[in-house]
Length: 117
Image 1 (tube, rainbow, N blue to C red):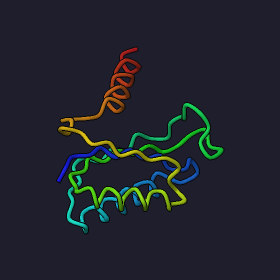
Image 2: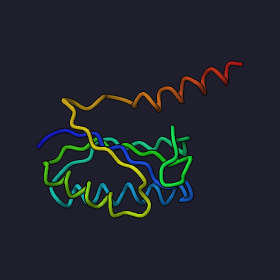
Image 3: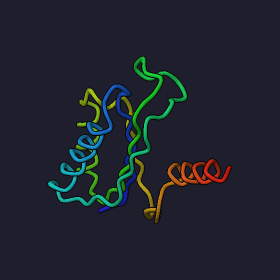
Image 4: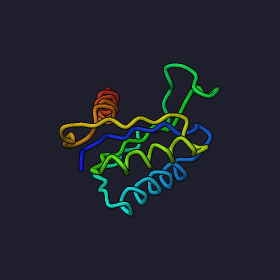
């Protein structure tokens, strides 16, 4: 099995609770096929660099996955068919990053700076 990072963007009009259930669906798909999901992160509702399917914002999510290529191709197929997902990308990595991703650590740094002022 190989290590992957899976990032997906969901429609902006769904709630964070629906985003969480979408993440759980992905997790259950991977685990029932024999893969493993490490950390999951919800990056929040963020602006997109350009319009995607007429949306300017989207809910971002990240999953660290340890799975075979067949599981990743099935995940890709289901993400393409999902009405809630507007973009997704799975990248093979050599090792998973420990701790928070760069996106979440940047958010925490901003919060600390704002809190000091």
